[in-house]
Length: 314
Image 1: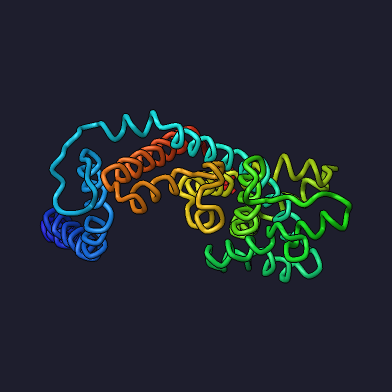
Image 2: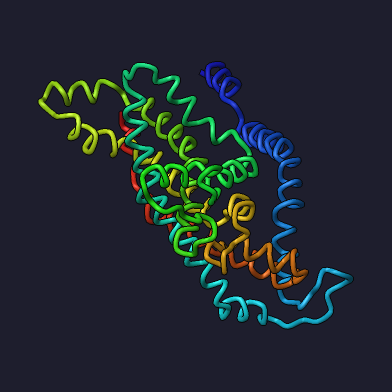
C-alpha cells in the first residue's frame, strides 16, 4: 500500500511546479507583448496626455506653452457656431451612411454573395475604389463635379436632359450631399466586403431548410440572414460612425470645408485652427473633444449592442 501511494504521489504534478509553469508562461506572454506595449504607450497614450496638456494653453506652437487658460479653449469651441455647424454636418453624414450606404451594401452583398453570374467581377469592381487613395478620389470627383457642362460629367448629363447645370461644390445646399456621394463611392466596397465575409459564415443549411418550409426570399432575408449577420452589422455601423467623425482628407481636398463652412467637419475644423492658423492649443482641444466623442460612442455602443450572437450555438 505504501509503494502504491508513493507511486501516485510521484505521478501527480506538484502544486508548486504548476504555479511555476504558469508564472513562466505569463512571463513569456508579457515579453512578447512588451514591444507592442511600448510602442502603444509612446505613439498613442503619451500623445493623448500631451494633447490634454497643450489644450489648456493659448499656444501658437512656437516655444514652450506659458499662457495657461484652463478650460478656456473648450468653452470657446463649444460656443463657436462654426464648430456647431461641423458637428451638425458630421451627424448628417452619419445618418445618411446608416440610412442609405450600409443598407444598400447589405442588399448588394446578399445579391453578389449568391450564385450570381460574374459575382467575382462585381466584387472587384465595388472594392476597387477603396484601394485608391483619398487624395486621388477627391481629385477624380472634383473633375466629375466640374461646373462646366463640357468638362463635368454630372453637369453634362443635366444639360443633355434639358436641366440647368449645378455648381456642386460651391452651392451651400448641395455640397454636403456631393461630398457624401463621394464618400459612399469610396467606402461602399469596404462595407460590402465585410458583409460578404459575414454571409460566408452563415450555414447554407439554414436557408435551405427555410425554403423547404415555404419561406420566401424576402422572409429568409429578414428573419434569417439579417439576424445571423448582426455581429457584422454591428462592426460595420461602428466603423462607419467613427470614420464619419474623423473624416478629413476627402473633404479638405474637395472643398476645404466650404463654401461658408457648409461642408465643414470636426476634423477639418481642427486642422484649420490647429495648423493653418497656428492655434495649436485650440486645435489640441478640438482633438480631445473628438477623442472623447469617439470613446463615449464606442463604450455606449458596445454596451447597447451587447447581445448573444446567433451564430454562437450553430
